[in-house]
Length: 240
Ligand SMILES: Cc1cc2nc3c(=O)[nH]c(=O)nc-3n(C[C@H](O)[C@H](O)[C@H](O)COP(=O)(O)O)c2cc1C
Image (cartoon, rainbow, N blue to C red):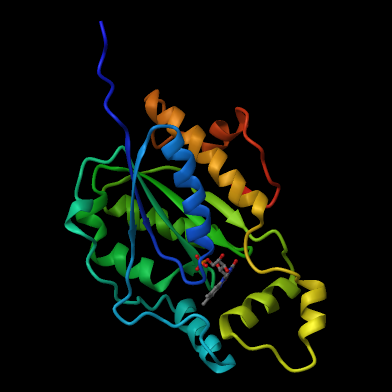
């Protein structure tokens, strides 16, 4: 006799400014799909999207200060189809000035109660280095919405240090001081996540699909345990 197994469904709510989170999520979703899980993406859409790159040093500095003050950036309401019976909701986005990004702050303040209440939520963080305050704030907002929150999955840029901070600032500004190009490129040869991290996200998606299918996932599940069972690990990504 054949038994009918219901397909597991994952909603990925995310914001991305310079496509790093999107690159990770596309790969994660590939792994989930390969594992037979249905995935729906819901990007947070700012009503006045900040341009990337910003185009000036002053503009980039202003953006960082606004982010440090946790100024919300208004986003459109999520699609009504997001109000559904998801097995897992992944809330993903970058760290901005140690905090949640402005669009994520706005989403969590205005729309999370209806969407996240009673759901299992996995925060995913893309950052250069700093993620703890971001993770704590995400936990605080999502628990307040009535969600069951898992420990976050954190991907850090593989090139840390001061030069990488300078590289990120230059990338946001979209300008590089004349005469500094080769110096910056020597110390910070690439911006963002490595191809290994993108590949690792795919492995992780496949493993997540497996535990979802087996019903072995809840707010106490440490994704580290999921990863340890056989996926490639990159020292620059951190699961806590
Ligand atoms: C305004 C702004 C502030 C940032 N502040 C931080 C920070 O405090 N700590 C950090 O580790 N990364 C910081 N970053 C870097 C981003 O978190 C990182 O580049 C991330 O991978 C970008 O993801 P995204 O392309 O999906 O937006 C900042 C980026 C921006 C645009």
